[in-house]
Image 1 (cartoon, rainbow, N blue to C red):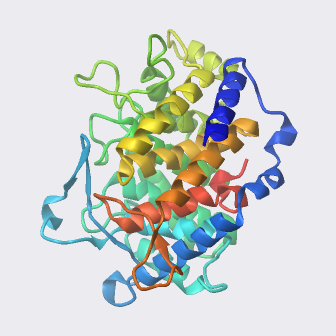
Image 2 (spheres, rainbow, N blue to C red):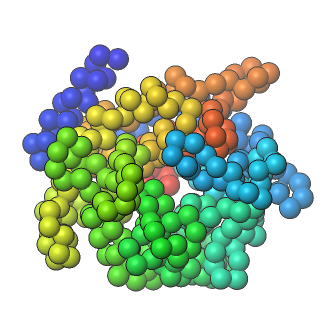
Length: 392
């Protein structure tokens, strides 16, 4: 433990000194040794557990159940129409579970989990409305974005016929749902925005653009302006990002929001302080955030989140984006970060009762265990470099 934290301190010095990884440090083959035998065993157990929990019959076929609702402060409010249900087929969680299998190199129609992915894909496609909005059982923009990302990943990895028209419609719905602040909120075209939902849309749009779908440049620029204007650039929380714009009362910053903000910057194609500063100058933003400050804030707040919210969606959602940001950063900083989170996740894994250790899962107090298990499996498999959104 001591050596692990010391490695993070060394990485912090690299960031503060303006370290930029050499190109060879971004070679994904150098990351393969991070994926240990113990990690592989846990991931195999997680995928077996997820496969065993997938709904197999009726209209829910292909889905995973979870609580349909939305974050409210530190808690979780169920949608009014689903409050009497102990978990329903959840589009967003199904998309994340599907990406957990894709992260291991599994593909629809192939191998031991081919049917699992086929059914998950079919369920997500059944959720696409005529307008392009992907929703079911009251799910909203979080789930829409995760589903769009899942479909784009499948299309990027397989070129599966018939997906393109669905993707075109869902992408168009996404950018037309952006509001005047440059962000997104729980419901399409809501007048306010927040960082956690905005990053979901930007990541999905980036992957859509990567596979050849047109995304208007102004959509990404407007989202970037929203993110830059939400940055804390002075004081003790320098490098953090706010939940909403600075003028919103009772605002806050956090580990998860900062990981989301930095991931948005990277996904928009800005990888250095100079590029961030130039964007801010060109868009009339007085002072630009520094990537090194963002990384420092993420590192400095991780331990508190791990201790205070071990079974909370804050931990899993935050690390889903922290993993993306750190992987994009690359080099020794990424490696030390991954080793720390990997070991923490392995220590938090639980053996499924009666499965003789063959299946493992992670707890999630509010959303459901399928959510936390899917996200943990995605994070642990980043060094395998299969999922296109994690490829440098």
